[in-house]
Each structure stands twice: as structure tokens, then as C-alpha cells.
Image 1 (tube, protein in one colour):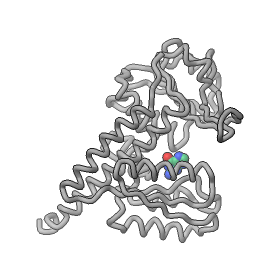
Image 2: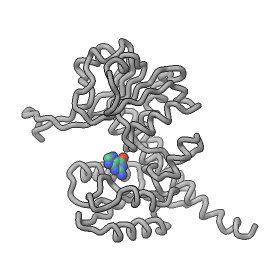
Image 3: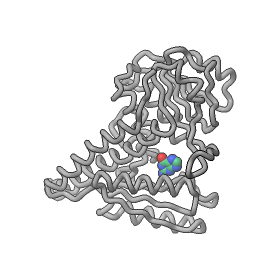
Image 4: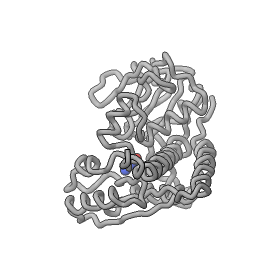
Length: 303
Ligand code: GUN
């Protein structure tokens, strides 16, 4: 069994990003700028945003956070999005989810300029993804593809089973792996709450991607010998031996399953760091294309 070490790979990719950012600055451009909008006090959201800030700074990406109380009105949040869409000093931004119940998340996402949508959640970017047109891809699915690619795991012709059909992970990763591309060319089965006999399906998986948000759902009997297992789950469990009083675990029962796989991601240190690094890659992409557009727009006007 080979551990898919997302932490190690992410730090390697971060060094590559840092080099590109340094080159941009040497060429007289400014560093890319990622902004995050954080509404309310959700502890998980606060942790994610703090991590995005820290990782951005480590590679030289400018980071800013716009914090608002839980009581912000939908109209006001739409105005924040409009402001960031127009701010030439911001290349890309995310609105951390979930949002409070009185705010329509989809309406907020659809207001984000697709060229600044570094989460890849805007319908235009998701449509381009579906058609195989280059675009900003959702960070977690993109991180999973990067893991498969960098570990040189063959995906063509493989049966990939995805558990969970969220808009953030399950649905986009199932589309990406079925595309005519590399990584891709998989036969994909997407399982969800209405799927019967999930263990019967997962046992047929060459690649099993688990993103259903249920702690240790995948057990040893559910996995084919030699399968590649990608665990997107993240749960806190009490652990008195830790200073924090808890440790993180996934949707897969790692101790049971690891010995049966060819490759497996740990939790923590698997998909999580790859999600963040994908967001940084998207910000770099938005920064380079955005600044290039601004440089050529004057000429375009003359043509
Ligand atoms: N909440 C959980 N995951 C994500 C993510 O990838 N992006 C945003 N914006 N919110 C999230």
C-alpha cells in the first residue's frame, strides 16, 4: 500500500507556485491577490479561512479576509460581491460556505464574476468544466485529480465509484473523471442517498472516492483488493491524548481498509492540503490571466 501524501505533494506544489509568484514580481507585475468573505462565526469556516490565509502568505500570494456578522442581509452581501468583482487589486475571491439560512447561496455564487471565481462554483465555470473547456475548477476535485496525476495512477478504462453527490465534490469529480482527458476516461458510478446496495457497487471500484460526510462509512468488506481509495471526509473525534482534545478522521475506516488498497489518502494530510493548494493554483491562474488581460485591453480597444 502506498500512502497518497497530500501534505508532502502540496508543499512541493506550493514551492512551484512561490517560484511563479516571484517571477511575476520580477517581471514588474504584482503578486496575485486572493480575498475571502467570511460570514458569521462557524468554527470550521474560520479554520478553513485561516488556513487559506496562511498558505497564501507562504507562497507570496496577497491575502485578505472580509468578515461580516451572521445578521448581514443578502442584499448587503451581494454588494460585497459586486465590490470585489470590480476591485482591480483582487484577482480571485471565495465566499466561504455555508452561509446563514436567510441568504440564498446560489444567488451569491451566481453574482461572482466567473473570471474571479477561484472556487469554480459559478454555473459558467461548471458548464465549461463539463464541456472540457479550460476554466477554474472546483478546488477539492482538482486536488484529487492532481494527486492521481502526480502519483502517476492510471485512470483510463478504470471503474471509479464516487460516494456523495455534493456540488462541491461528488458531482464535479464524477464529471471530471469521466471526461475525455488525462486524468479521466473512467467509467464512473455516482452513488447517493437513494442508491441501493452501496457495498455491492464499491466492491467493483478500481478507484473509490468517498465524500459523503459519514464517519468511517467505508469498511474493509466494501473495498476491492488493490483499489485506490480517496477519502474526502473530515470529522473530529475525541482523543484525550491530544492537546486539542480531538483528532481528525475520515469517511473511510483507514485502519481496516489500508492493508487492502494499492493507494490510500490519510485523514488528515491527504485531500485537505490538496484542496488548499488547488485554490492557490486557481488564484495564480486568475492573477496571471487577469493582469495579462489588463495589459492587452488597451491594444484591443485600438483594433
Ligand atoms: N465550505 C466547505 N468547502 C468549501 C469550499 O471549497 N469553498 C467554499 N467557499 N466554502 C466551502
